[in-house]
Length: 371
Ligand SMILES: NC(=O)c1ccc[n+]([C@@H]2O[C@H](COP(=O)([O-])OP(=O)(O)OC[C@H]3O[C@@H](n4cnc5c(N)ncnc54)[C@H](O)[C@@H]3O)[C@@H](O)[C@H]2O)c1
Image 1 (cartoon, rainbow, N blue to C red):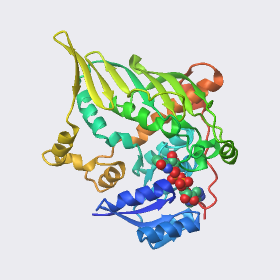
Image 2 (image 1 turned 90 degrees about the vertical axis):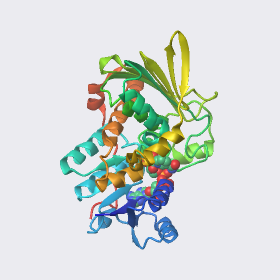
Image 3 (image 1 turned 30 degrees about the vertical axis):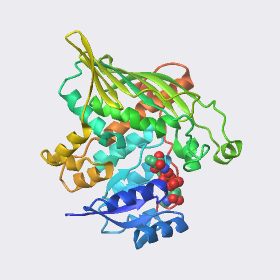
Image 4 (image 1 turned 180 degrees about the horizontal axis):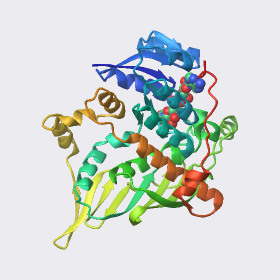
């Protein structure tokens, strides 16, 4: 196999972005698309020259010549559709967050293990030059004992739909499962979990808020009922802690970068800076990321498999590299995120085991899935 034949389910904003990215990957061929909205399906089909078009997911999954399926539906559809994809014998790429609840994400993970299919979750921060460089320094031990991380994400006024961009399904738990923590927190938390080799969560506490005024017409249309600000403090095995602050809307100035604190050195992730003390001198070291990237694509040609999430998945399906454990990272991200929701609801800290016990499926019935 020198090309992966892909179908894209859900041809909205991100589905279209995926189609554009596949056009830049020579080893990827999009052979079919699927959307329940026929007008959108035909618009996208015509624009990207894709002839095979489906409004029924179940029928698409009966096509014999599709190797892999990319799921670009709303969060609470990720689990049922991704599971059906893997059970149909296809590899699966799924948008973030992994699902609308930890329960559903865990089910996806189990089906990945049962079927042996390659499940990949879109965690775009894993492919930034900052992350790649930080990973090298951390894995080599340059930070010493890592004891604290800070996951920060800031939008001053950027709630989907009610503040302008994107669909109303982002801001209603029925379709999204959660708000800022799920939507953008997934990028910042997963980046840190990846950099610290997926630590094991012990417990988490936190709060969620929705206080900032919004357009009342759009609030009513969307049934807005998710958090615009999520805060938390998680404790991982071995004493590693992580504080989380994720904002879609807040009256304030941008938060500083996510950070990692180690006994020998610390790191700010954006812009990537390594902080240490040498010879009684405090140092802040910056790195030449573009030179690193050039060398990774020439001298160390392995870099060519990690340019972006979709390219990495396609290369992994072709056996050119090992797939990053994004399903595991996304699952553990979902665990701490939903832990913050449970902590808010119960008014106390919750353990990792409690999150497993409390989490329920939020998966939607998909009318066009079963035949
Ligand atoms: N919009 C973004 O910038 C962005 C960025 C990163 C990730 N994402 C993720 O992508 C996912 C989708 O977001 P979006 O912004 O593309 O939403 P969207 O509303 O623009 O697109 C969703 C598409 O799914 C289709 N659809 C709904 N139900 C369907 C069904 N049963 N069968 C087939 N098609 C169906 C809709 O008709 C629509 O075209 C979400 O999980 C989101 O978190 C979005």
